[in-house]
Image 1 (tube, rainbow, N blue to C red):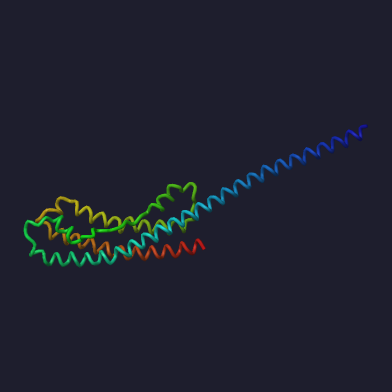
Image 2: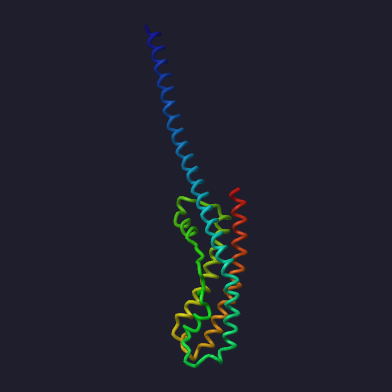
Length: 206
């Protein structure tokens, strides 16, 4: 009778141990699968974020490709206007005069950094390696501190009271021409950096 009880106890212990092992295995498997799904989702989000940045940079590059020759043309227009300014009547309204020089305006489209800003806001969910982050950050910083800033300088001159005084017209034209020259150089540099960044991102995604 004692031997039978001992065998039954051993059998029960083995059964409990086996069932406990199954439970522990199931829990560990569930944790592993959850972590795997989390990593897979993070990789998918990272890929999507990089693809959106690629689209944005390609769009910005197209915009710059259209801007560059137009702004080069405006430099020549302003240069000719400075030379011929003596023929303009004294009562010329600076704003109207300048707007007539560029009937298409300063720009017909915009460059954007929405994808990059969205990625930065979602940094807790999408993690990029340091090299990729540096690569992308550098080109957007060049865009923001270069082309975007210079465009705003042009707009500020157009909106300034001093710049729009009739007796300051020639000085304003010189200032706007100089701003356009700086903008034109920055656009060419930024376009090169767009292309370089896009090439490196393409290599990282392949």
